[in-house]
Length: 334
Image (cartoon, rainbow, N blue to C red; front, side, top):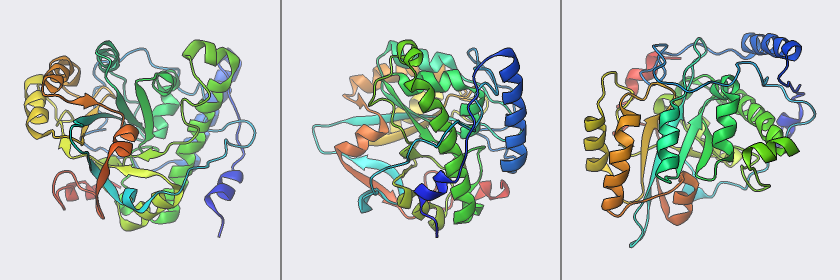
């Protein structure tokens, strides 16, 4: 059986740079890639093909292909320790630590191009709030500039969120592995772009930021099975769920409702899920007041990776929203 490293070595990649002629070639490659790797469309409440909502200027779709030139960046992650295997819902931290992680999903299905709510990112920067973003590979492909912005900003970190919002509960290990590798290969393309001298000047990247491999993963729909959980553990990738649901995926959600729920359910070590793909209803409006209220309660904002290092992860052998079995309604999405 091929090891994960050898599997990655089998992939030959082609780099694309912005330019009138090359951009056309990249778009063709992107369309070809979707035909080869395409997955069934999903229409979850989080990533349904609805109006995109507020969005900043998106990176040119197809400006970077999910092929990269030369061998991929070596995918070397340390083994995942037993306490970080399975689905991580929150982290137990000892007093006086009162840490919390705000996380934002950037998902995109096979048949849509979702948005990017730059207001959310601006609020986080303005208030000096650390956060973790979970981006699907397809979202990174259609938003290369925004992906680079997140990857290189010291307040933020980027985790994976599948390629096109697949339901991993229905996937066998081999299918999930292809998606995992494809997403990492495109991230490698972005990572190599950052290493160029001009990119270092533009984005302020340093050799130790960002990481050369995606070490955090969030399952689309919050669904999984034992095979795919073991797959992530074998690759040294932590599966990050949540224990607080902001509810911003619901149309008509208000800032007041989001604030009430998050303040009422958050505790030290909590992981809160929001959306920043233009479908986080009421999120940008809620964040300024919510951040201030959490700070008044003594909370310190941390990236998920920092939260994991600060305490003991609370894990479960299954994935769910708030209670076991409450995500079965997503089983119709494949």
